[in-house]
Image 1 (cartoon, rainbow, N blue to C red):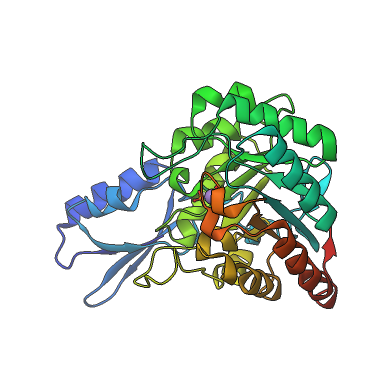
Image 2: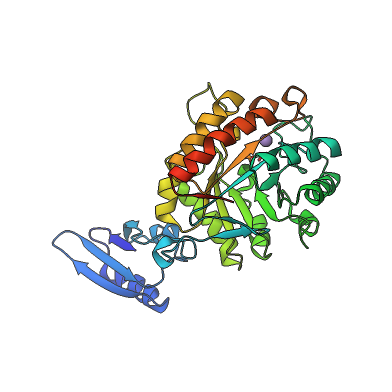
Length: 339
Ligand code: PEP
Ligand code: MN
């Protein structure tokens, strides 16, 4: 951390400030020029708050020179992390497709979609039981019953399950292999108590990027989970808010190479929530593979026109078959293994 002191800061106050920092365990590299006075703080500054520094009357500006995330940082862990979800590997050259309906609606729907997406090559079944909806009057999900129906589909196809957790109180329903991967949705990316709670489990976590979150904020949320002891985090870019209104969101493809530089965690793309319109999903999925993503999350419904949520962006099983037929040769071109 570099701290620039104010010109003409009283020497006694500067001395007291330096003593306080030394008392906190930092070594200070003091550089005094003709009109600038800079302190270089040496030590682990991850817990040091910039706003605490800026609140000191002797401080003019400060700047971090190392990232505030450590466990997720590629600098300290150069190799790609491979996360295993019920035996399906994601990351380090392993590509996994998670597919299924936005919401679980009934047993026949989830079982039928699970069978179709599995046959097409999706190794992980997605489905929402607890749904984060913008309107309280919209379908809120089948909740605990939805989890039971997903488990029935898993018993039929053998696919591991990923489903969203919205509330700490529901965690017991997600443990003991009831689900194979916990999804933290975009709206909860900065629900820090929820992040800490899933960090205390050993269930792999799919962490979706918040609607208006920076990549550093996303990685810091992963750091929350990892700091509690759970290293199995997969990041998901699912579109962000921009000035563009012709699509639901704007897919930030540049997030993939940048996140891979910042962290060793696998990165997957959800083109369904990014586009919000089914016709765009296949091309965005192809782009995701080309840009180096480790997986895809795709919404598939057996009858999109009657879906209880996100029908407009859902592919039919036939459209999903076609998408997978294009993705397979692309994956082999890029040297990825479809798991
Ligand atoms: C979902 O996956 O159904 C979902 C609600 O996603 P997001 O949190 O990205 O909006
Ligand atoms: Mn959805």
